[in-house]
Length: 243
Image (cartoon, rainbow, N blue to C red; front, side):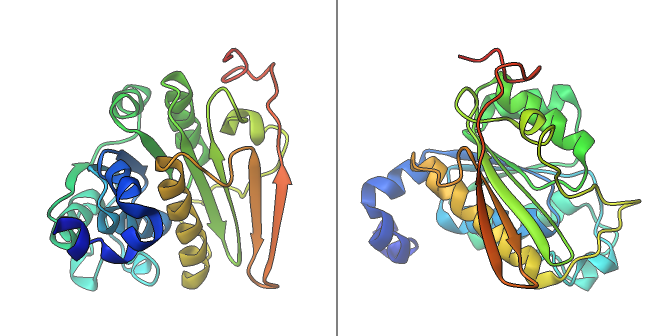
C-alpha cells in the first residue's frame, strides 16, 4: 500500500526494487539555499531513508525568490531547522536531521560516515573542499552543483573512479564563490541546476549516475548544454591515492 499510494508515480518509472533501494539510502545535503532546498524537497518526496540538512545560515529576504522551502515569515530563522520542519510535513516517512552548525572537517567527516550519497549545494569553495575531502576519505559519491546568473554546472564524483573537486577544478575553472553572501542569479536557473542534481542523487542511489566522470556545463541564457569528459589525475593530493 505504501508504494502504491505515496510513491506510485515514481515506482512506475524505477520499479518496486528501485523504490526499495531509495528507501534504504541516506542523503546529506550541505547547503540548504537555492540548490539545496529543491534537492532536499525531491529527496524527501522521493522516500529516502534519512536526510541530513547541513546549514548554519539564517533565512534572508533576498533568499525567498529561489529558496523554495522558506517564506517571508521565516526571515531570521535557521535554515536547517525551518527546512526540516517543512520536509517532515512533506513526508513523515523520511527521517530528517537538521544540522545548524558551521561546516568543519570534523562535522563533514561525521556526516560522510553516515550518508550514502552526499550533495554539495554550497556557495563557497572553502566549504566545498572540506566536504569533498570527507567524501573521498569515506569513498562516498558526491553530487556537486553550482549556479550564478544564467549559468551552472553539475558533476557526480565517485571516489576512486572519477576526479574529485580538488582534482577537477584545479584544471577546469568553476563558478566563483559568492562575495559577502551575494550571488546574482535568476530563480528558475537555480531550479534547473538543482533538478539536475536531484536526478543524479536518485540515479546514484540506484547505481547508475549519468555524470560520473563528466562535467555538465549549462548556459540557460542561450539554452545550451555541454558535457565535458573528465579523467582522474593520479597525482591529485586528495583523491590520487585511491585505487
